[in-house]
Every structure is written in structure tokens, then in C-alpha cells.
Length: 411
Ligand code: SF4
Ligand code: SF4
Image (cartoon, rainbow, N blue to C red; front, top):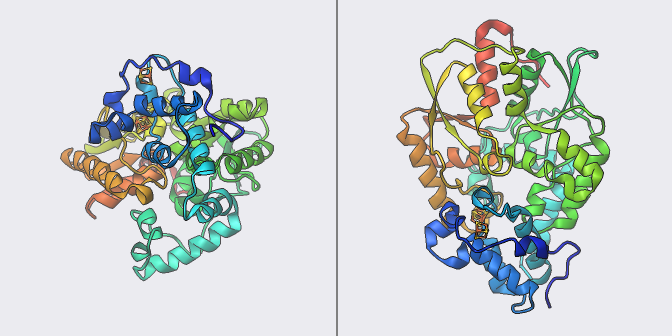
């Protein structure tokens, strides 16, 4: 049996691989193993073999495709502009549909249902906060590994959903609140709102938006991801920019064109927060702070650098905040966070995480900027306690506050 899902890998994409191998040096799993089947070209060959009827979707196919981090570094290197991210997501959906996995139902519930429900998320987060306070969260099987490096969870839980800030007649932007970002990373939302208000925007966060669907899509639950996308398309109407402060969510929202014209419109409105803030700094809507003689190490999340081709903007924020920017790992490999990757491939995730943390430590600076929640957790997991890992917008907001523009409003 070849493909059975509604949206299998497209032949036109598979045919665009000219097997040049330029993607191989960029691929973390190939660099670690030297194995062709752990490279983008090797994985595409396996997917093409199934499409041609020479192989079936079996345990080996599942292994080959699940070992991919979906970091999309190969896309940046590819001269054929092969949309590898979409191809591998479709391939994972086929593997999930055809190869039984013991915890499939649980994963599907967690990624396809629980993340999409604000009530489930809040109940789970309250439980996690209680466990975190008594130091028991990291000891839990599976959950402990997935939540290592998490910020201290605040209780009661704040939420930006349903919020509106700033004058009604100002230029409006929509804040995408996300699922775990809304309950686990509220400091990033607070800083985002604060900076956008200072830039003169009105910020609104519609109540009925939901998880972007990236984790479900990366894990092969394409139907659940499509349901979440349709819900967001119905909720995030209008023509104002949609501001996202988690690189993984932003990359996924920018790929909503796969869900039709309305999805394409939403994708075109989506901006990473560093894009809109950098634009405001460059146009003079936001100030440049004078250099304070402090340094910050910048890490490039894959879903910002490769998924959205954004690398200049976070540096603009950090320099405008008065910092000297130090490159942590230019042109480097994925940090190994990658959603549930550390649950499925803990050794590889750890090897990549330690490698990235060592590169950050080698810069000699203890303040680190990362624009993706998963990378932030991975860095904290492998750095000593003396490091502070924040989103670039939090670092800019902090400098703005020190510059005398007043305290952060609470969402
Ligand atoms: S997405 Fe990343 S891990 Fe997967 S094949 Fe491409 S470069 Fe390698
Ligand atoms: S760089 Fe692109 S065309 Fe070349 S082998 Fe890799 S995926 Fe194929």
C-alpha cells in the first residue's frame, strides 16, 4: 500500500530534488551519523520510493522520517527550493496513519485536542505549576523531559486571550496567543504588548483563537492541524497584522496557504514580533537606547532562520536595546528541541542541545536571546543556572522600561 492520507507528499515536490547533496552539510542528523538515510536527500529517496511503489510505509519508513528534526535547514540550502518541511509533514502523516505506535492515541489527544482547548491547557498547567513548586515536575516520565528548562509557572495563571490594549483609534495589530505560549510564556506576551503600545499600536487578542497546529502537523496529525487552522482562520479575521512571538507558531501560520485562499490571506498578514518591532525602530516609532556596555548572545531558532528567513530583525532589537550582540553559533545546527523530538530521540536531542549550549557558553556572556519557546527551554536545560535566556522582545522591553517609559501593563 502506498499513500492513504488525503494530502500525501506531492510528486511535483519530490521530482524537484536533483540529488545534488548541497543540503547534506546543513543537516544535523546527517552530520551526527554520516548516514545517507539520515539526510534530506536520503529521506526524499525513501519517500519517492514509496510514491513509485518500490517500498511500502513500514517501521523502517517510520524510523527514517521520525529521525528528522523538521528544522528545515535543508530548505535554506536547496537550489531547487524544495518545500521539504511540507513534504516531511505529509510523510509523517502517512507513517502515523499506517504504522501502529503504542502511545498514538495519547499523543493525538495531547497534540490534537488538549493543546487546542484553553480549559484543558489551564488545568494541565495548574497541575504542572504545583508539581514544579515541589520540584517533582522534572522527575515525571515523558512529561519531565518535555518540560525541562521551563520558566517558573505563575499562579494564578495569567492569559492574554480576550485582551485589548491601547487607544481604539490607533493602528490595530492582532496578538496570536498560542497554546503553551499563553500559559507558560506569559512574560513574552507582556513584553510584546508593552513594546507594541510604545510603538503606538492598539493590540487585540481575540478570545476564540486556538493553537496554531504546528505540533500536531509535525507529529503527523494533519487532520487535527487542519481543524485548528480552520478555527484560527475563522477567528483571526480583518486585515491588520497578526503578531506572533514564537518562531515555530509563526512559521506554521505563514504556511496556512495550504488551507485555501483564506488561509493564504492569514499567512500574508502574519509577522514575527521581531519584524514589526524592528520596522518600528527603523522608522523611529520606537527609540534606540544608548549602548550600556553589556553583551548578549543571540541564538537563531530554525523556524525563524529557515522557516521564515528572519535573522536580521532580532539583532536590530538587541542593538536598539543598547547591547553588543555576540553570535552564539552562526550557520549552526538545530539545538535539538524540535517539539516531541527529545521524547522520541533523547540521545540526539541531548547531543545537539549540549553542543549548542557549549557554543553559547564559549561566547562568555550570560544573557542569551532566543525567539522561540522550545529553543529557550532547550538552552536552559543545558546551560548552568547562571544564564538568563529571554526573548529579544523581552530584552528590548526591559531596556525600554529602564529608559523611563514606565512599567509593563499586565495583559
Ligand atoms: S529538516 Fe533538518 S533534520 Fe530534517 S532533513 Fe532537513 S536539515 Fe535534516
Ligand atoms: S539540496 Fe535540494 S535538490 Fe539537492 S539533494 Fe538536497 S533536497 Fe535534493
